[in-house]
Length: 129
Image 1 (tube, rainbow, N blue to C red):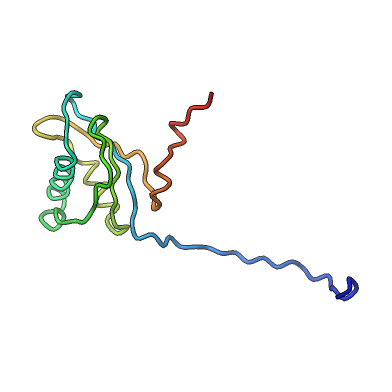
Image 2: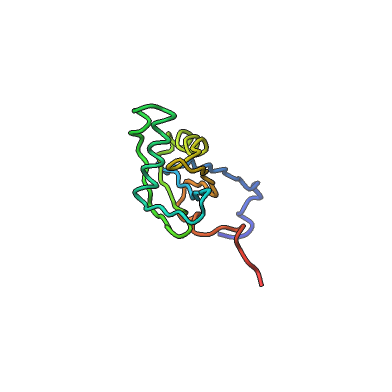
């Protein structure tokens, strides 16, 4: 093909939009207790969240499916996995939880993403030297 045969056609662009194909959302959470020396196991944390869901949404809400993928007992931080359809319900239950064993507490949601990999790093905690 010679250069003379190539017509000066305008460039065409195609816009591609990908919908979120992930079924889950992932939440990085931390639990803040009034008594900072108190400890919780992963099972106790999950039971606390289930009781918050049950208090807010009744027995059906208590049976709401979510997974505790990771939990650090020393810092009381963890990663939850929840279906997209239940993200708002779980987040609202975490927000409204206010006590654990007659002690004041609250959950802090620090990151939410449909991709687990994005929770591996937090730009807010990045230290540049």
